Image (cartoon, rainbow, N blue to C red; front, side, top):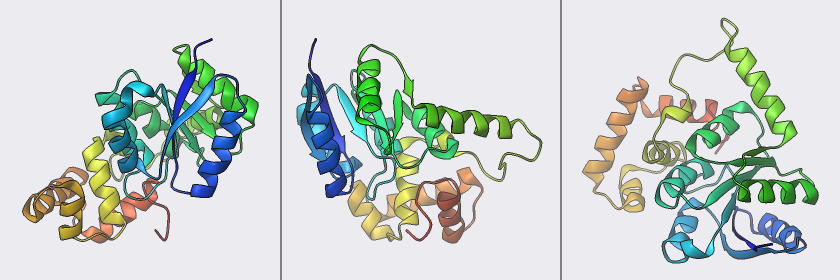
Amino acid sequence: MPAIRVLLVDDHAVVRTGIRTMLELMPDVHVVGEAAHGRDALRFLKTHASEVDVVLMDVSMAELDGISTTGYLTKDYPHIRVVMLSMHTTATHVLPAVQAGAVGYVPKSATRAELEQALRAVMRGETYLSPAVAKHVANGYRRSLTPGGADDSAPPPEVLRPHERELLQLIAEGHGTKEIAARLHISPKAAESRRLRLMERLAIHDVAGLVRYAIRKGIVPLGE
């Protein structure tokens, strides 16, 4: 059986250590690298993509969240499978992750056996949703079919392109125009233009509205 080479991405070092210990107990599963957030993961893949089969990644992370990261890496590295490992199991988080290209979604409460099952399933070319996750997705889908059950005040986060979601996260985390420009390697003027285009796209007219939208859609947690 070929080895499964995993890049582990989570913004909590203690969590990464625990997950790594779990993975190393699985036959033919090797952790080839770790990253503290999406931006670190993308930097790692620039030079080590050929050494990675699966990215096992948290959804909610500072700097660059798992969903934006998934959108970037599945476009640039289509051979790599993305499995989300998250405390969030609602449709608000799962559906955008799948839309971005994730082929697996497992809660952090999963057993070692289920995590191993997910890794082996995606390596066979299958999609794996934990039963707990699938239940939430089905319930969310049913609610969306009920009149008044869906939030139609703004487009769902899955309509956002990765760079738009990345920008929205940075704004909601409280970064100013100059800091956003530095992180995105663009000019402050370009950063401001992107912010204005994002507001127009979402029909939101101020930064406070963008923050509320990001919280409501699960892009940043309340109080972030």
